[in-house]
Length: 470
Ligand code: TNX
Image (cartoon, rainbow, N blue to C red; front, side, top):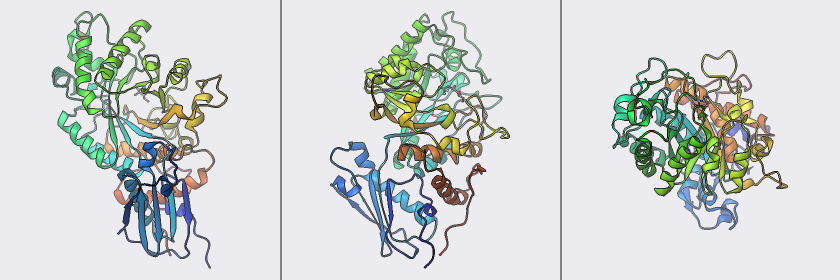
């Protein structure tokens, strides 16, 4: 007999909770799969205690006697099972096997900045396809910043009219109409992905200040900014139209953000602390009043309440507000910049990317654990013996686009590191099995090749773009 079958050669990303090879000689499986919706959590390896969202996403995939079978408790699980099957059979012949699988974290996201450079609906559909394959389920869109305004606000048409035509450098900009947003939300939903809209306040607001004189205390509008500095703008409680602007934004975003609206709150270097607290509270209140939870960058932690989410990105900042917020029942989306800011360069020789959080190789983006992040950063609850595992809602990779202009460049920065973030968010962490991940990603990349994606050939991986053979 030959070598035992190596499960990593299936190219499965993310790594399943449990995988057993039950047969001998690999054969070609067709994708004519039998599907069963069941009611018993034990069938997918879970008990009655497991949270509803996890039960919905769990699945069992069996390949036996030439036939594939997927069982799950809900459509989401069936979808995940199909994706696992597609990955497996795309990589070549398969022996009989059983996979029982479910995610560790509910929030498995990617944040795309469509302000610094604009990306169209078509571009974003490519991103959705990549996310779907990796079983990511939240697309966070950064829709406003100093360099442009990217979403139609019906009651304030000036925002798009005056501030959507710019971007970093001499780019043309662009924006998404409400119809575009609805289409995007529909495309995302087909892939099991929820769109999370962000209008960033009170900083990162030059585009809004440019379009609306009444957002400026002196009524004088600044030009739109086309550089890449941050911390250069702020809303003000003294400006006459601040409340009206926040109302209009909340009216538009709350219906779109079915799982929450992101209000930003980062890098407000020009906003005095009391102003900052007041302005973030104004934004937060308006989202809550419209029945949605709030997501904010960690700087806004003190303004959040139980049920809201804070996004931890900057490992250099003091974590006391974050720790206090988690004690109030605010949960954390882990986006540590040194690991999952996919706009950081892979290494110094790269054309694209920034380096403020360091260069991030594939391996560095993989070998970390969100469950211990808070404690490592000094933001855990010092009195608790163990970090509260419930404090982490999930993981979100981010790609800011100061240096990224085309969809090919965007995909190049995402892949392969987005696969690492996806595996961590699904399996719970990435420490201890790098060799397995590197082997699987090498096989998985054959599908990227077939799709014509341009991805980074990380030197840490022995890329193996030929499907398995008999
Ligand atoms: C930090 S992420 C920012 C962005 C920049 C990004 C570049 C965050 C909350 N703020 O404004 O685009 O770094 O990596």
